[in-house]
Length: 138
Length: 138
Length: 82
Length: 82
Image (cartoon, rainbow over all chains, first blue to last red; front, side, top):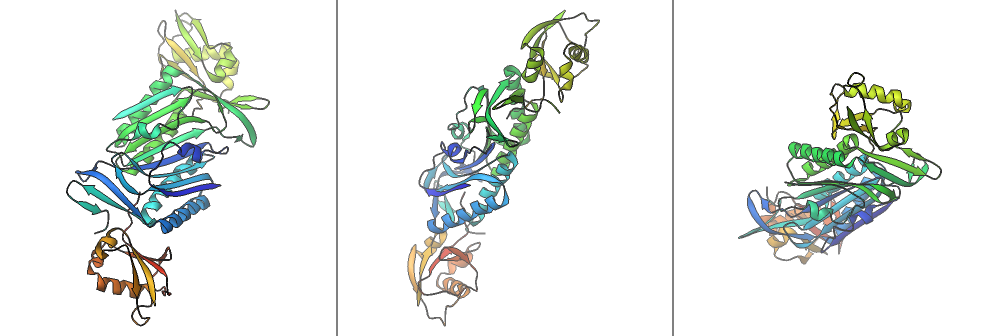
């Protein structure tokens, strides 16, 4: 069992297969989160991500361990980007590999859902004339 | 809406992000199927895939269209390899991109589940001393 | 009249070729169902498969589809892609 | 006694710095809950957030956790990664 947990300036989308591939894995499921052009019909020029890095890495590691405890996985990857990201750029990559496909699909969904709930990373949406910390206010 | 449907000798796992990424997509979900070392505790040396190519492409195209009708997707990819594949090599890549993550996760699972049911592609498991067409016999 | 037969996967191993002309009178073979009966008569090992389907001109065909001259007819043993 | 305070996201904008020493007597601040009350008194805009959590030494902390000298204490506004 191998887990990769990282916070980086720029995510490489090309290496995820080799990071998750394993002789015992018939299935690999990956989720990429990316910057979308519009939020509620307002044009986003960029997203800016800030992390409490040491704690975020610990929380990501816990999420990986929870997934490993819950499903029969061979490898897990959780990586998040920080800094300013433009439209279409990747901001998060999570994935899992397993013998059969159900486990990696369910685990992958769990990884991204839980990351969004617990990992101390913050996203600021930058519009033409303003910027907003997402979810900060009710 | 753009769909990519292909049957190729060798799959490139590195290009899937750029194939699915889209200015309107916040989420991209990808499933890679790969060759596993063991089937029922017997060591597999390779898998060999054969396709009824013209019909397989039509069926893959139908599956993409069904997914597009069912979920709000921006791009869909369905690619399958043919020929002899060794352990850890990719044999199938399916994926979808969407504004929000639920749609791409559900669509991606649908793509691989349906591909396995309807697309005329056959897999032969090659063991040390025999080879077996998968699922051929009850 | 006749059709172009294609065999894949284990069906190719059973029949021994991947492609053949298959000629028949409309008295013996008219529909896909008739063709299946004839194929199993000619190649009894086909009946040992979990299932096999017939595709006509690249589309899955029901047993009642009537074959036309020069159709491309494929024997589709259980698929196992992915 | 005192702790090292860290502020992230909108909390950093509200407080105006990302890091500060925060000194207190154990009479005014003992627990995480006490600290939250004090922070809202000092920076009323924090009370307008959907929620905010406190992490002590890199772990989410409940209100009853008692702070120790030199703890690293972070104000965690609603997270929004991914």
